[in-house]
Image (tube, rainbow, N blue to C red; front, side, top):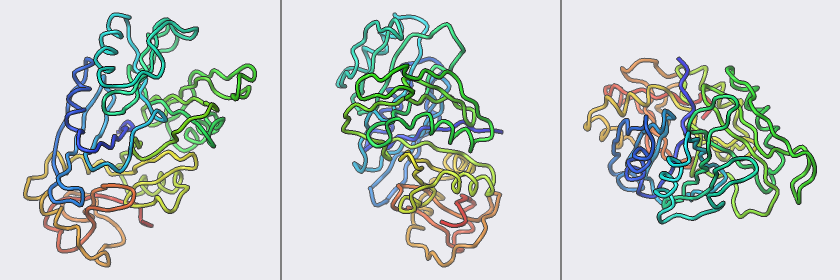
Length: 327
């Protein structure tokens, strides 16, 4: 079964608080699970999974290593202006408005803001065209990547087996620094998930970073190796299942078994996994098991640091996590 791509949000310490706040904004939203990792290099880390209007998310509280910016935002579609305004008024408290809530040529009711945690949101009314999900991750290609949104869509659609392009709205002519043909808006469908891509050649003080990554859940080792090899373009970022593609977007390639670890694992098991931080790397076997009776033990903390890795002495933990063979 195909698992949708999950945006993964990196918070300093507010992952649980933010998830509870977000799931109170829209129907069909809930916190799926919360777990905590003890005695990590960042202290106690909350891990949270939640859905927002049906779109799955992951979040972690792991210290102030990365800051949210508008390069990846979340576009939210509303049936009525009343509901849109209600959610806007909650998100804007303690946040920052980037485009005022108003009528624009492309939408009768639209606004762009960063909330009190720094996460960016675009709120707009549904249009009368093709149906789209309520929540869609939106990628803004800026600075050196400005003008590459179309290329990125083609790249992702070539990698993911279930993919298609949707709406495409290129600029008809040069508009300031934005060149004709670059994307004002486009959306595309990969791995059961609709995403948006846009270009902006205007000066910005932000680019893609690890604060928001895109998580691919895989059921087999072959899938993990395939996506990791196809997407990765920065060897320095190839750490513990994290990677960066050629556009600077961060991805995590993980196993579907990871969710089972946090849903089904006991406190004792999770604490014992935490103790595996200092396991000897040379004990890692060349190929993981595919059940819950031993195998690779790994949890991703960041692109630069593993919290856990394989040790044969941990086979009795009953936890498996698969990673690229060449990591």
